Image 1 (tube, rainbow, N blue to C red):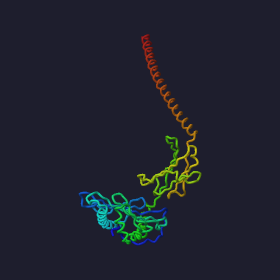
Image 2 (cartoon, one colour):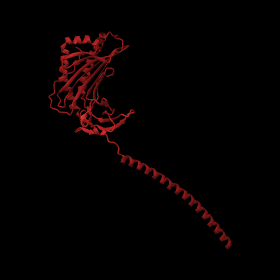
Image 3 (cartoon, rainbow, N blue to C red):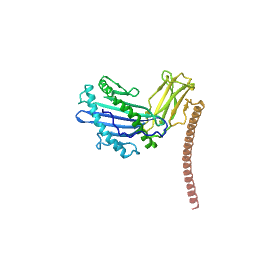
Image 4 (cartoon, rainbow, N blue to C red):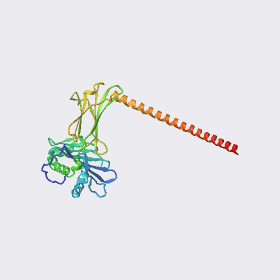
Length: 353
């Protein structure tokens, strides 16, 4: 048996309640490299959407790197030892799987595993998952209801038959998901609650778009929210428009928050019959937003304001020009007057003499 063997810490008594569901996920990957006898093993641990640990056998120290300030040194040191042991098992796995696919050991191949669990807001077990991939394609996936393994392709059948006989593998995963994984997740949430349990409500706006063929669509866009779980639903006269709605997957915004949008098509003129309902952990209650057209009075006001500012600029320019012109003439007159006065003084002095 080569499945992951983590340190058993027991089952935590469920005394905490958190908003929303939460998940713990482990990503493992072992990679063969031509010309290098040493295979590379990588492990990354996530709580919800936050990376908390990573391990890379290419790292000189061969140690686990904590990604959260609240990680206890003794804990991630134990994880380092665990990952070192697991890396050896996964190297053997990759070599074995390669033979099942009739591939040469000298090529570049990858063997990956995703495992973990999710809990409800009260901390109780929701679901678990364990799946494997080879060279980027599904290999084996555990059906957690029947405890049967599902082969992703012909190359995985031999493994499936082997594990079908060894029911202990599936039973181990069931026990791990429902007990140890839940304990670990509870522990992470309690230790790192100031970071892991933060909530940022979404900033939402509705925009109108017209395609070249004249078709109209409304887009409801939410951004700046955390955690990533969010619901965007278009309603027409209060009824959900699931079939008519176009959704994109929730995407990271690059600053630790997430973004998502949902669009719905309609006939021009019926926009006010539609409303976007937004549900998120950071909202006390759902938001309902409609598209708001810019009123003609606002447009007129903006136009008048722009015209007034332009006229004011012209007037100021004329005043400055006339002032400069006036100052120029006044300077010329003053000089001439002074010259005439001087001549008159000279004449007077000559007469007296």
